[in-house]
Every structure is written in structure tokens, then in C-alpha cells.
Length: 88
Image (cartoon, rainbow, N blue to C red; front, side):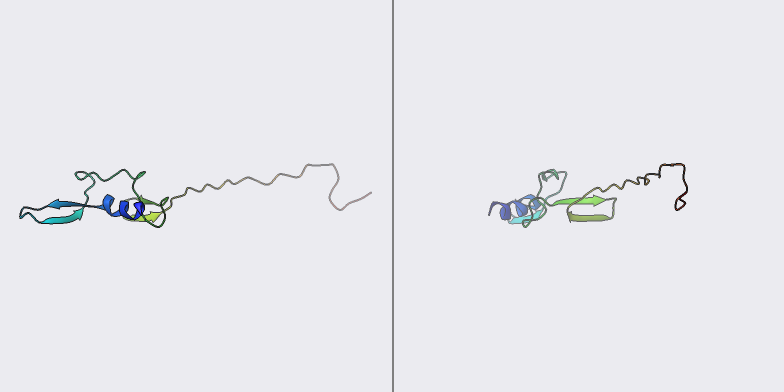
């Protein structure tokens, strides 16, 4: 239950407007204290998922992994002095 409460609390805040009404608004990252991304929950269903971005146009919620590929050359056959398939 704590997780279900934490996501809206991190995203919205309640304030009083000029007429005295209570209004719920989005939290702004600069002025309303949005937690850093390492602490902020992106989904109440998966507490390990985080917000991620690549550039200015691509945003997603979930996981970000970094894959590397190594290109090892196959080992060269060792010369043994005889041609393959020739027996004397």
C-alpha cells in the first residue's frame, strides 16, 4: 500500500490557490521538489523500473541496459608441415 501512495505523492502536490481552494498540480522538477531519479518510482507495479531518456525526444519507463559485443577472431590453425588430406 505504501508504494501505491508513493507514486502520486512524488508526481503531484496539493496547494491552495488564490481563492482558497485546494488544487492538485504536477510537481515541477525545479521548484516543487521532485525526488532524484534513483529514488523516484516510475511504476507502482515494478518498484525497480525507472524513467529513462535518450536525447531530447525519446523517453520511456522501465529498464535501461547497456550491451557490448566483442568480436573475437577465431583461432588460426597451427601449421603442422603436411597438407590436409595428403598422406604419405
